Image 1 (cartoon, rainbow, N blue to C red):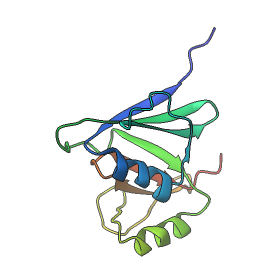
Image 2 (image 1 turned 135 degrees about the horizontal axis):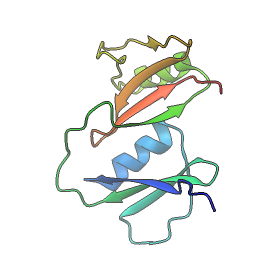
Image 3 (image 1 turned 90 degrees about the vertical axis):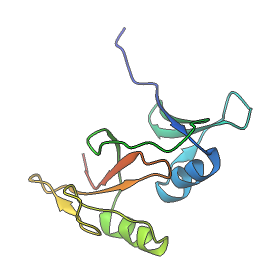
Length: 127
């Protein structure tokens, strides 16, 4: 049997803003939450993979951009328009505000942080 990724978990201060961010901004679909205690949310991130958000962290922490989660979208331009409408900040790989990085292979990418400071890469990888 091969090992496969089941889920990634993040530990947050408050569940509601983080769950809203991943649902309304990132666009993830919720999946049934097995614990039913009001401190967890689950989102589908791919075929048989999920993001598990757990409430209970004492404070927001500092994270490095190189430790991130990446999601692909159909259009970086459409996604950045959504961020502008919501007045959410993003940057390129070097930290330039409201800029888009174009990798050597042509994939466009931006970086933003969720409500608890976790770094998110958004790209338009078509593979």
